[in-house]
Length: 328
Image 1 (cartoon, rainbow, N blue to C red):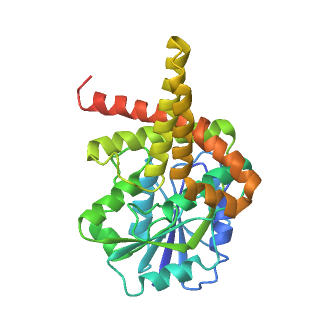
Image 2 (cartoon, rainbow, N blue to C red; image 1 turned 60 degrees about the vertical axis):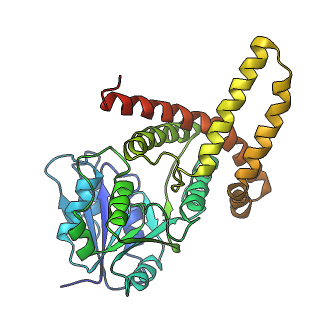
C-alpha cells in the first residue's frame, strides 16, 4: 500500500539510541507514513531492537556506510516523500506533518529541519553542540546545504538525482548531495519548525574529537570544491573568524614571549572584542536557550578550546587534500 511519507533510518551499531528513535517515529501525530530501518551489518544487537517495531527492515549484505544505507532505504520506500533522519535522532510529533505541508507544492525543493536547541541529553557539551548546530543551520531560509538528520525530499527527485554519493568521504555526503542538487537548479529550503532532538552524549573529549574530525573532512572537501570561505552552515564565517582570531592571538603571545614586544598585548583585546562582536548572534542564541550563565561558559569554550580543535582539523584536512592531489 502506498504511503505518503517514508521515514528512512540508517543504522550501524546504534543499539543505545535506535529504540528511542523508532519509538518517537511511531508516535508521530501524522498518520500516513512508514518507517524503513536500514541495518548496515550491525554487531551490537540493534537489528533485534528494530524488529520490536512495525517497521520495514532492510539489511545490507556488507558494511557500506550511511550513504548506501539511505539509498537502499529509498529504493524500498513506497512513500511519495522521503524523510531522512539518523538513528540517534528523536522526531518531534509534528515534524512529518510540517514536512508534508512544505513539500505539497514544492516537489523541486529539498526541505530541511534541524536539531532542537536543547538535546535529549541536556549536559554542557551536548547542549553547546545542539545550540551551535541549530543556530548555524537556521540562519538562512535558503541554506548552503540540508543535513540528513532532518531532510525531506520527493522520492521521484531523490531517485532522479542518483542519491547520496557512496564512494565519498566518511561524512558530509549530505553536503555533497545538497550542492549537487542546487547546482542542477533545485532549491534548498530550511524550515526551522521541523525539529529532531539529537542524542549526543558528548564529553569534552568527544566534543573536540568531533570538531577535529568534521573540520578535517570539511576542509578537504571544500579545498577540492574551491569554496573554503563560503558561509556554509556550521562551517560559518563566524566560526572561521573565531578560529583565525584564536590562532592569531596565540601567535601574538608567542611573539611577546620571544621578543617582548608590548604592543602585541594592546592588539589582543582588540582581536578578542572583534571576535566576540562578530559572533554575537551565536552568543545570543546561547543566552536564549539556556540563560546568561550558560552563555558565558559556552562562549568561553567556543573562543578557546573549540577553535583549537577546528584549526587542527583544518590543517589535517589541508594535508589530506595536498596528498590526494599529489602535491606532497
